[in-house]
Image (cartoon, rainbow, N blue to C red; front, side, top):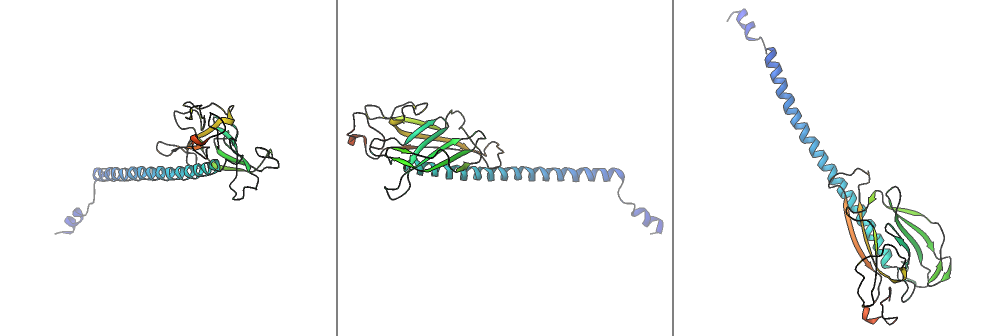
Length: 229
């Protein structure tokens, strides 16, 4: 083979071949990047879901523990001091010694959509069930970003007993009848800490706490069963 023939054999790719090869490479790279982007989004959504679940479970556990420790005022005394759709104030004690005064707590959905817990501390005076408490105290954030469960209008619901010993079907809109509140419903939506919500990243929670220590049939206070009796 002459040197001219060898040079012709080493001409390389034409412009059209380079364009086609580049287009094919870009197509493959774009598909790979799309798969990576979708995978990253799914992983982030899973992480957000786990984050929301952890916050919600921890918050619900703390709320239940406090409310389950709230029957400290004696037979027939309701621990609920005040409450509305998104706020509840109550008395509770987690101390083993019954002589230690209880504390007052408020759990509420703040204006910035945080679910907060304020501890007003132990009673500063008075006696059961008319204790007095401080008007301020430290606030703990239970959930950085919380909201109502879709389709609902309240975080807290209040149920009194009827004269037949059954829980009232409809909840109270507030605790205007607080002395008769015997069950508290709790439901909220926990959102990821970063506040970015997409489909599947939030977690809904619901529970109930009954403010009663003995069965209805053992109540001797009146024909209407009372809380913590």
